[in-house]
Image (cartoon, rainbow, N blue to C red; front, side):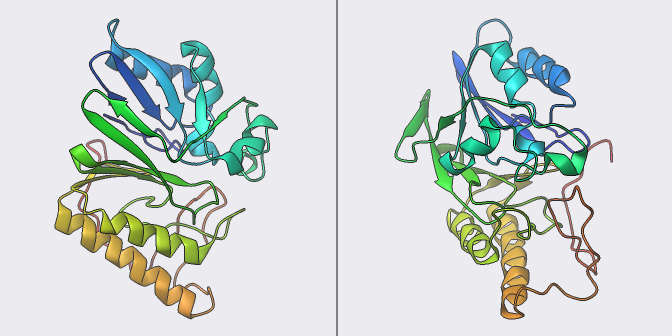
Length: 251
């Protein structure tokens, strides 16, 4: 279940089983009480939240994790390369400084990528997909033909940024190709509704890959028509604008 991001918050996703659930990403610290209410409203009294998995150290994904972790008394898992950032309250590599925010200090547990997390009859696979940052991960649920891409796909019409701390353009292309090869039928981006349909997802990722490959072949220089990204943006804004089928109901 996707919990749509509010303002700068990234989408959070609840993976719910019969007795337990996992939360993927937390949003910023700005709406942490509202996020807690949303999570509790979906879980009810019968289902317990067992862990938080962060797909990125960036503030829109991780800022609210401390409050949620303490409220539910559960651990927070993140790529080992990002642990020091969260455990020291680093506001640079988390990009919290760009939102004029402090970064809450939180103890984390490193992800074991050999682990296959079971949720009822589903297996949840955590994949290393660096590019937006060195710690970026994606989540693959093969039984549901679903991928949670996080910062790797900001939105169907917004290619990722790689020019932030620990970002890497070549790794970003490789990670997008990895996700594309999974042949998913549902893809959860950073912002906006879920992309649906195998062909639609493939063609959308192809557009992103081709654009980044062209930029890489031009020594990393973006097309001149593209405006400079806003300080808080984790994406680029192509010109002319790319198509987007998915719309939030309140847009």
